[in-house]
Image (cartoon, rainbow, N blue to C red):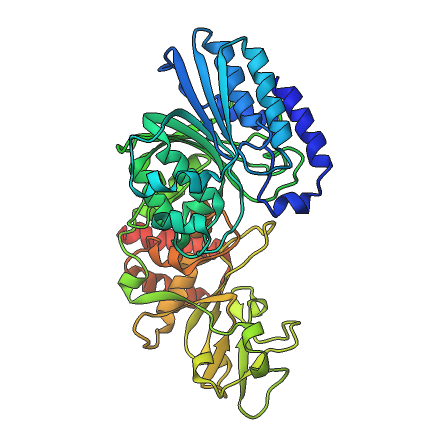
Amino acid sequence: MLDLIAARTREFAAGFPKEERKKKGQFFTSPETARFMAGMFDLSRCGDLVSVLDPGAGSGILSAALVERLLSEKPGTRISLVCCETDPEILPLLRDSLELMEREAGGRLEWELETGDYILSRAGDYRSRNEAARKYDFTILNPPFLKVGRNDPRSLAMSDVVYGAPNLYFLFAAMSLFDLRPGAEMVCILPRSWTSGAYFRAFRERLLTEGSLKRVHLFVSRDRVFDSENVLQETVIIKIAKESRPPENIYITSGGSGSDLGDLPGLAVPYDCVVSGKDLFVCLPADREDLDAIRRVRAFSSTLPESGLRMKTGIVVDFRNRDDLRSGPGDHAIPLFRIQHIRNGRVNHLPSGKGSDWISDEKPRLVQASRNYVFLKRFTAKEESRRLQCGIFSPGDYPEYSRIATENKINFIDSADGSELDRETVWGVFAFLNSTLYDRYYRLLNGSTQVNSTEINAMPFPAAETIRKAGERLLMSGDLSAENCDRIIDGVTGEDGK
């Protein structure tokens, strides 16, 4: 049944360009992934009738996978299935899928198809937290991956989980959690981006306080998460139970692609190693080495702001400041530093290839003092081996300039109060950020290629005196390699444990 529906879905997808479906946030789940997701549900509490919700049902692949399992493993259980889908192009295929499921079920399945907007149709009950509204035993979903405006009616309907730039995927997930009965379960496939960052803070709070994160699957390969879609976005599958008490452990599996989603290695990870801090950041270790890195970093009791430091974002946005950019030095022109100037642990104002490595100094809001900084690239490529790529900026390298400028694709570490940092502190911060330990930790925290100041400022760091001690040793050695930084932080944190 599922394989037939998947084959029909591939035929459908072949008739519509990927770019057209991408505009709708429409990506079809592979049958292997669908069966894997259906296999995550605990069927032990199924009674005579089980209710299933599939928001954004598409062609019905996820519904078919769960129905297929229920028919096989729970022969005495009847199934009530509700599918929600608004795309008129795919509705005929979804109806065919539902009719096929009904025939295969032999009278054990009744289904409904809702063609109204999933979010808006439930908005009133959601806003009033009406627990008397219709609820379900299982929700399975591959939500649309689509950014929407803050004034979109769906964003306004769920404003309590919206901050910054909303995406339909987390609105669907939050509404699906609301649609569950107490103790019921939701399995969904999501981009990994929700695990950190300020934009998803309200969503994480809702998900992790009204729900209990039971299981996570990390995809090592991205090429077969969705069926023939060539989606490169990093994704995870999560299982949530609608209960407020967090579990003692979260079971995390990793690996698998295509047909090899069977018996996968897993870890039972203590809850506080996965979820931490007031921002409820979620770290997802794939193996013991990842878990050791989390424990080691989380053992530090301070943060950069608590040590008088803060990561900030570069000021100059090219397209907004075109008239201020300069192609070379001259009167009232100061160096503009870009990510291309971060090389081998230092910041060097060599030609970036952008054609405008200078900027007018006549707008005070675009300039900053030339003093000791650590610069970090805000963006790196997926294939690059490191996520944290940083360089030391030394004002002594540019004695003729008292002011500089930084482009918006750079983050920089500065003092929180605007005073100048000493060299030892700056070099110490570099030693930690350039280490293998912190690069690994950040990758576990953030699945995207963007380095966010919110996350760096919230990450655990050792106390200020330990950072400074690391800087002293790095200055003495002059070796800015990650290997040397590893040795230095092993030494200073092993000595005082801070």
